[in-house]
Image 1 (cartoon, rainbow, N blue to C red):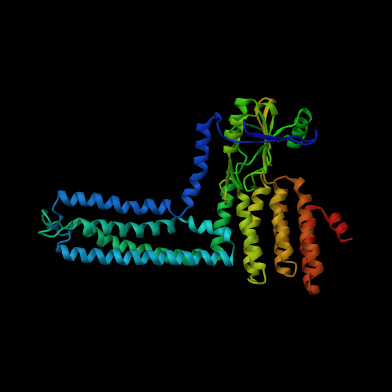
Image 2 (tube, rainbow, N blue to C red):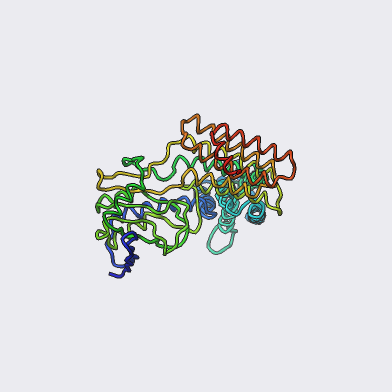
Length: 481
């Protein structure tokens, strides 16, 4: 069996890189289904599936109406087209040429919008622009109308062309005339929506909304029994019994999704204990251990393949199981706005406000269970997830760039104070100490960098408000000393 094992000391790990060649598959059908589900969101967010499906309706509509034109003489009706074949060709050619020109305009505007969002805000927000359903439908609709006109155009026949009699599809040509107006409506909708969607208030609100919805599907969360026991203590007990086998990532990229249900199924069938070292949003390489498995002698190539397939790795992140990606986008917008090249503190304040809304939601939730019991105490999964402290670190990161701007610093401190109030109202006092330290890390350097006495006094007042709520004044005084 082609694999590599590296032995270390007792405190270290026994790791193995196992290939996928020539192995039987454990629950391969379920694993492939999980992979397809994780890719479905990528397909919907791309700029070809939805536009392609919409454009295909133009071809199907052309076939359907041409069939009706062969069956019924719509030219005799008042609503039908009654012109000659030459007139029909001229009309369809004009509509097709105009619509493909408009489609090119839409593509050009989209490219300009992507460039503006990338340079002004953050390149990580481009996915939201491309995945917008209106943009996809407009693009597909314009191409679909062009396709429709072209198919109707080639179906028109004059007298004397071969053995065929004259055929002018009156209903199909009339529909093309109506679709031309539909194309104009789509163009107006696209221009109106694009002008609105490029506003920073719309971009930040859209990212925050997706992030808040992602929190409802946050990893981990499966239908197995979950315990709030200390996962580190359980891992210490497992490591004392024997060294685990480390499972490497299949490829380099971001962990996009982890199917805990499929992992639980693999662990249950093979009587395994698993410890996940990564969570959605982490970057891995083929040299990164993504999971530790006990007992080590139970691991074979088939199990490694099944575990690797349960951890989807992609070139980019999404918010299907990774709300921290939305937090990262908002933080990047704030950081870009505070740069000397952009110098837009109002945009930074807006992004901080949406970050506050997200953190207030997280602050009121119960901590995620990191131990999932599958079969008594013999089979379990210890999961890793983004902690409350890791989320809040973006405030400290923004604070480093805002030390010279008292307004932004005060907004950060106010956000921490509001999050602390949410913690108190939801009876999570263990998080108050962390919030006090975050506030001190933001405020103390800003006080030293403040250019005026008024700025220093204002920052101290906002810091004192956080200290009052969190009860961390002694810690702040110690840091000042």
